[in-house]
Length: 150
Image (cartoon, rainbow, N blue to C red):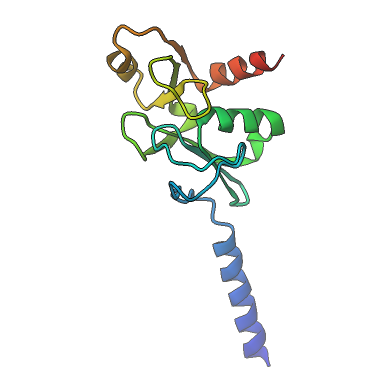
């Protein structure tokens, strides 16, 4: 009887460790829907995702959906990971806090905010050349979106 109890506890421990995995899962482009707006996620240059500290995955078709959802729920402290797509390397996700953001009419995003992220700030000027743009950090981006809600 003791062997069954021991095996049960080992299995429960293993299940607990596996169930609490907080690593991001790849986005299945063309099949998954945005958690915020329900549109199908197809754009590898503007997608984003979060993973809660409990391991729950939320995926978005645009960075503006991610930011709006975080601001609406006021739950950033509950998130283990926040990732945004790197425009210069489609499909690559980068940490939201380390990304550099820009808004430009030259590069439309899925929800119309024309918001894009890159891993390296010096890429912005080379991408946009003579086009007008405004740059943001993660902190100033959230402030910008908060300001647009009023």
